[in-house]
Image 1 (cartoon, rainbow, N blue to C red):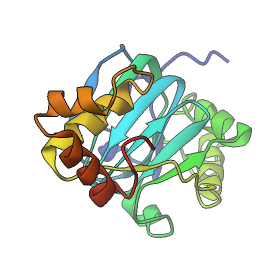
Image 2 (cartoon, helix red, strand yellow):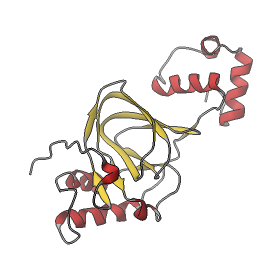
Image 3 (cartoon, helix red, strand yellow):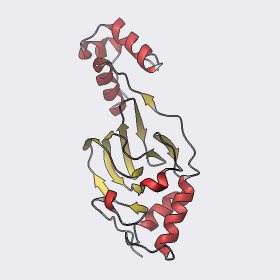
Image 4 (cartoon, rainbow, N blue to C red):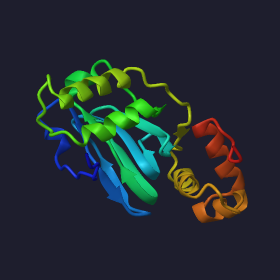
Amino acid sequence: MSRMPVYRRNMDDAPRPVAAMARSWNDGDEIPLHIHRRGQLIHAVRGVMRIETADAAWIVPPALALWMPPQYPHSMTMRGHLDMRPVYIAPAECKKLPRHPILAEVGGLMRELILAALEEPLDYEDDTRGGRIAQLILVELGRLQQRKLDVPMPRDERAARVARALLLRPQTDLGLDDWAERAGASRRTLARLFRAETGFSFAE
């Protein structure tokens, strides 16, 4: 059976507990701060995402996914062409899942389950292939292995601007003096802000 991308709107209002979607984005596309009524496993089979909340940010390549609980404000920026395959989980099912975002590995089974779910109707019955796929996705969500790759975001806006820029383009020749000038802060102030508000030095 063909696995063509499926763009399904209003996934928060899907009729069943588990709903998968496929959508593509271009390099540099942004999704501004928003929330979902459902929990969301944010995963892409191609491309890299930067996902940011009020107090942390993550770089999410295809080997990983970010679990985002219901009603948790976040924004996203795409790096390169991105083929996203998120899965939306009804609030009742999220009670058994983490209450804070976690970065996790996506194994082969979960990846195939997500792709298989896209082949099924949103209004699947429990005793059908779609229902069984949904049940297995919930089982696998309960077994996610967290990866500690989140980056605390500075609260000071000057340091936060620099942190966002570095997340988008980590391979840069700019040094602390260059970033301090762009941020409108002294070298010492920027270094102090990074250490105080993220726990990391600027070089780290």
